[in-house]
Image (cartoon, rainbow, N blue to C red; front, side, top):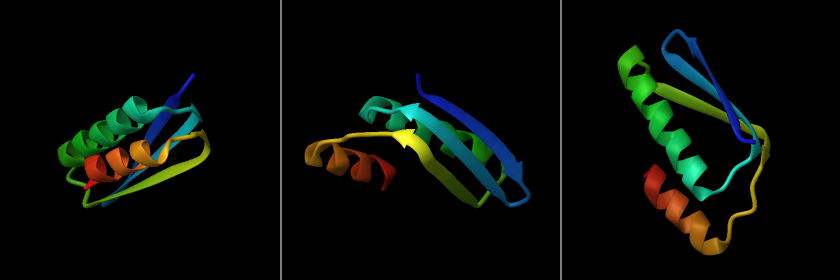
Length: 69
């Protein structure tokens, strides 16, 4: 199971994720954080993925990088 928590900290948003994450979940997490940051007028988002498990292929890594950009 992939879990995410969001904490608003002033001008920043902290997103903590844990569990097994595949490319669709990571892209969705980025989209979710982007929308929450926009609605909270946050200029920065910090992702803590230390408790996450991911094993993306090089192709998926490039797809995630392109999505984040």
